[in-house]
Amino acid sequence: MTWDTPWNVSASATWRYIGRVGNDNNDHDPSLYTVAWGGSYDYFNDHISAYNYLDLTAAWNVNKIVQIRAGANNIFDKDPPVINSFIAPGGQANSYDYYDLFGRQLFVAFTAKF
Image (cartoon, rainbow, N blue to C red; front, side, top):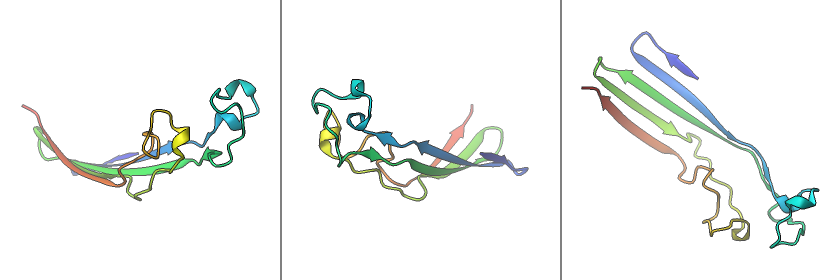
């Protein structure tokens, strides 16, 4: 959602949603079972709940040449889910990179057109 004000400033709010994720071994469809686990039910890694992130950004068009932007990503500083290392092939640290691993991030930037 973006609001363009009459003062050459725009403010934006972005909602990022990652839906609930379940373990294939816990599904009723045996074609989804992984060979390594042999289709056994995994209680510890049953699912990862849905995640919501909110980002805020503001941009000011100083003139026709310069624009200044500032904002915050993941303003509520929501931590990523911690998962068992056995569920993440390739040795992920403790979560998938789909989730915001760095927490709240603040930024300021400018653009100059020549």
